[in-house]
Amino acid sequence: MKTAIVTVATGDYLEGARVLFKSLERHGLPSGIDRLIIGPDSCAFAEPVKMDDDYSWVSAPNLKNRDSLKNFYPLTMAYDRVISLNADMLCIGDPSYLWSERIGTLPLYAALDTAAQTYYPENLLRLELDPLLIFNAGLYVYNRNRLPDLHETMMREIAEGQVQTYEIGDQGFWNNFFQRHSLEVGLLPSGLNYCLDRYMPQLPPAHQRIIHFTGHKPWRWTAPPSDWVYPYYQAWQAEHDRGD
Image (spheres, rainbow, N blue to C red):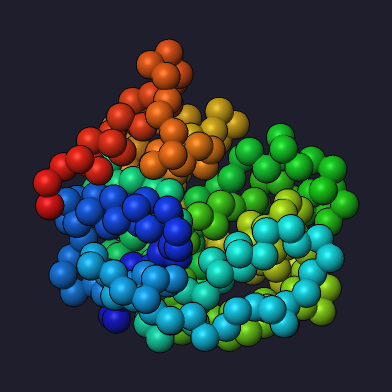
């Protein structure tokens, strides 16, 4: 199976991507999986991919964060399996389930997002979205042969106003599209996208594999020792400072 690990990163997010890839390598990312980064013209730790679509043709009245549309671009990659991760992540445990044969054959796999029903209850209700089915698209696994036209179909329906977002960016579009078409999303263990948010599933350390810094980015901010997220920011800094 031809597989790629992909992240979208520009500006200071490049430092986040560098640390992410370092941490994945240290926890067993196989050499046969391609490392791709969308955004920079050159990169020392992954193969840069030029984005040939600026999404300027996608007009959505409720879209505030246009840059978030770039998170759909990994769906265009010519691979059997695309594993897309946000640059604000850190691998701290075994992530091998993401590229294993155990993951199944549904088009998309992602972890549940339980915070959306706290932050956007009225918007979810307006769009008739089931809060129990909301997933976090910060990390997803796409099996191309199960839904090869996913990118084209989703972008067209967003541009035509058939699919709306319940928040300011891509997260709401993902969920609206999949629920609108009654498409099943395979559930990844929450530990593979452990979001630092009190409204997301809380897991014991042994179950935490990939940390998602959904709030302050660790290359911009240091958590105070009294904050419950302090150990995770320390772990990111340690990986940052670790020799290659």
